[in-house]
Amino acid sequence: MSNGEQSKTEQTPGNRHFNSRLRHSNQAYLRARQNDSEHPPISRRIVFVLLEHFSMMAFTGAVDTIVTANLLSRTPLYRFQAYSLEGGAVLSDLGINISVDGELKSLDANDLDMLIVCGGYRSDLTPHRPVLERLRALAWHTLTMGGLWNGSYLLAQAGLLDGYACTVHPDSRAGLEESFPRVKLLPMPFVIDRDRISSAGANSALSMMLAVIRHQHGDDVVRGIEEILACDRVADDIPDRPMSILEGSATLPDALRAILKLMESNIEEPLSIEDLAHYAQVSRRQIDRLFHRHMKTTPSRYYLELRITRARRLLLQTNAPITTVAIACGFTGAPHFSRSYRDFFGVSPSQARSTQRL
Image (cartoon, rainbow, N blue to C red; front, side, top):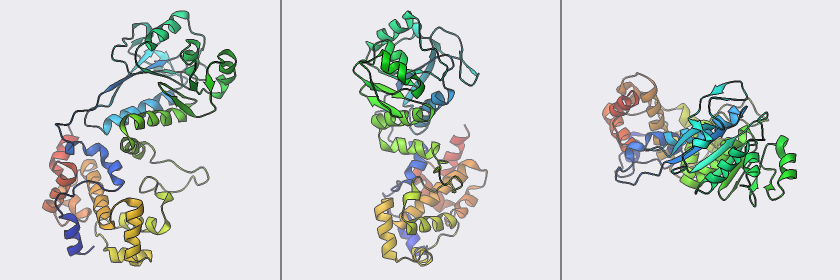
C-alpha cells in the first residue's frame, strides 16, 4: 500500500469503526466505544433445571452461548443458575457431579425470565407430583420455558406444552407422541414456538440458544458469538481444510478469497491495491466491486481493519513492546498506531493492555 493511499485511508476523521465483518471478531473489545449514557440492556435471568444423568454437552453448549454473549456486551446480557429437582449436586451423563444453586421448590420466580429443563439419555422422565405442580406454578409468571434433550417431556407432563410445537430426542419421541396428543411434536433439531423452546440433542442446544439470543439482541451479537465458538467448524467431506480467515469465507468468490489470503499474509508490509490486483490476476475495479458486494467496505478499509485486528491480538496476547506491535502490523510507528487504536477501540494501546491484565 503506497504511503499516499495509506495516509488517505487511515487519517480520515470521523470514520473510526469497523465497516466489515471483522467487527464480529472485535466486538468484545469495542465496549469502550459505547456511550455510557446509553441505557444498558436488561440482564435476563435463566435457570437450568438439571435432571439426574443430564447431557453435559447440551447443558454446556447452551451455557457457552450466554457466557460468550456476556463477553460481547458492556454489561452482562444474561445471568444463569443451575437448580436440581430435589437439592444437592446432580450427576451428569459423564459421571461428573455438578453443584447447583438450589432446588426447584425454592426457586424464586419474581425476576426469572427463562427456565430450561435439561435432560439426558438416561434421565428419569417420571418426576414426582410436587415437581410437576411447581413447574405449573412457575408457568403462571411471564417467562419462557424450555427443554434440552428430553427435558420437554417434563413440561409436557405438567401440561405446559399443550397447543405448542416442540422437539425431543428421538429416543423419547414415541412416548411423548403417544402420551401427549395435544403437543405438536416436530422432527426438528430445535423448535421455538412463542414462549416455549426445545432442542433434541447436544449440538442443537447451542443452535437453539443462538436463535433465542438473535431474537433478543440481534444478528451482530450472534455473529460475534459464532466467530468465537465456531472457528473450527469443518465440512463433513473436507475435515482437513484449514480454518478460514473470516467466518463464512469459504462461500466467497475465489478471487476475493485469494485477495484476503494475500492481505492476511502481508500484514507487516502491506501490499498496494495494485499489487493485490496483480497477484490475484484481477483488475482494480473488480477488487472494488468484490469488496463492496461481499465485504460491505472498500479494500483499503478492510486491509486497515485486518491490521488493527491483528495488532489488538498481539497487544493483548503478548508482552511485545507497543512499538514492535505497531511495526509488525504495518503502522509507521507507535504514535500512528496509538491514534488508530484509540479511534477504533476508544482506549489507547497501553490502557487496553493494562485493563486486560486486571
